[in-house]
Each structure stands twice: as C-alpha cells, then as structure tokens.
Image (cartoon, rainbow over all chains, first blue to last red):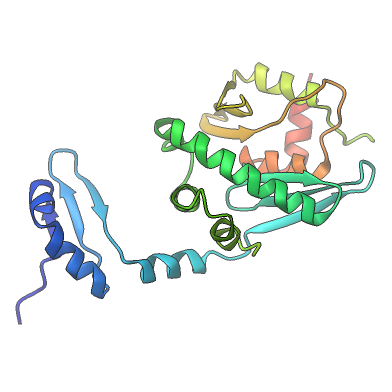
Length: 145
Length: 77
C-alpha cells in the first residue's frame, strides 16, 4: 500500500491546499517544509487541536494576601496572565481582561515573544488571540468557565 | 511585612536590569535575566503601593524565579 503523502514543499503546499485540508479533516497532520529555511508548519483539525489544549492541566492558581486583603488569580503556564480583586471572582474577571490585553500585546510584539515564550505558552496565547471576541471561549481555554 | 515589595522597588529592579516597557498600556516589560529573554506584566500605579503576594508569585514565575529569589534580588541593593 502506498504511503500517504504528508510532507509538502512550500510551493506544493500552496497549490495543494485543498487536498491537504482533506487529509487534515480525517486526522492526518501534514507538514509543509520550507527547504530554504528548514522551518516546518503543521496543520491539524479542530478535534486534535482542542484535545491538545484539553491535555494542559492545572493552569490557574489563586493566592490571597491577608495583609492587603487582595486575591490574585494567575495562570501557572502563562504567568503574565493575572488579575487582582477583593474577591476570587473579581480576580478571575480581571485575569480574563489581562489575558485579552496580553494576547493583543503578543500580536503586536510577536517577533520578540517568539524568542521569549515556550511552545505551550504560545499555543495558549495564540488560541486566546483567535477567540478574542468570545469571552466564554477564553474562559474555557483558561479553564475558568 | 519583611517580605513585602513595593511597586517602586520592583520598578527600580526592572530598570536596573534594563527591562524596557512595551504594549498598549506600557504594562509589558521585556528584558534579559540570567542571560535569558523574559517578559513580565506589571501594573505600576504609585511607588509606595505594596505588590500583593500572589501578584509577586506570578511576576516571579514570569521571570522563572521563585518568589524568595525575586525578593532577594529586588532587595539586593
């Protein structure tokens, strides 16, 4: 049986995008390789992508400062995402606002961030950026739904 | 509160380590710490405001330090 073609050159990737998407739909993860830069891009379907996101566990912590009477909620994987409040709920709401703000800053400074954040951090922020107008989805991504 | 850190102390720590502010509200700081690039989000209001302990934990984690290490470095001067 012939092996399914899963690796494409950059130009090939552009011209065969429909076929590639057809493979992605069923669960293949094709790779588009830029031979000049040796960089690869992968495509995956929503089911696989959301399963990968789902695998990321224990993402949030809430700490209470007894002296200041302030809660801080922060994401343990992307700790730049945090919020403060007089109640846990207020801190979580502020954390969600912080997530949106951070995602916008990520978008504006992507070249710097690509050298600072690790792959899981970039995955979470990119997914938030994709859903910037959907508060419920962001809550779901950060597991505070 | 011996372990407390003020916003002013942390701001000076960032300046000492040559972090630069970016982002829409200038709350995002980029810099190098221990030879590695770091990004930290910090909301400065006034010098004397104490940073809540949980916020300090989040900031320390952004810098890949423990909270104790961060406090020691901030107060190293």
